[in-house]
Image 1: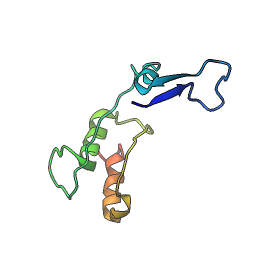
Image 2: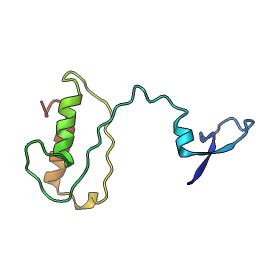
Image 3: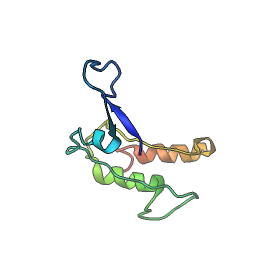
Image 4: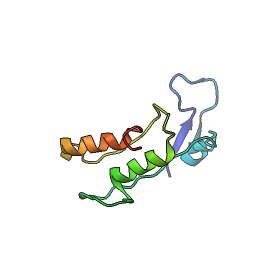
Amino acid sequence: TKKYVWPLEHGADTTRERIPLLLTQVLRRYDYSSAYGVLVPSVPGYHRLNNCPFGHLKLRDAVRRHTPANRSGGTIICQYSSIGSFSLKWLHEFASSMDVQAVR
């Protein structure tokens, strides 16, 4: 298990003792009580299912369920392993899945 040196911030107070910590120890220093997330798994292929449990269709469902209709902005974090293989049509579908107004 890798240890991280605390504090990690650039320009942090260098007079404090820098103690190696496990990542779990570093993460426990923060308050995540107001954080909320939805994990959206990805499965290769093209899917046209109602209530699809993965991919951008699941993302669309999560945006619809967990975002107030009158809300604009917010953060969606995505990870891709093969973005170069996405078609323009798919990218438009993906973008519309993240659009709060479009999914209503």
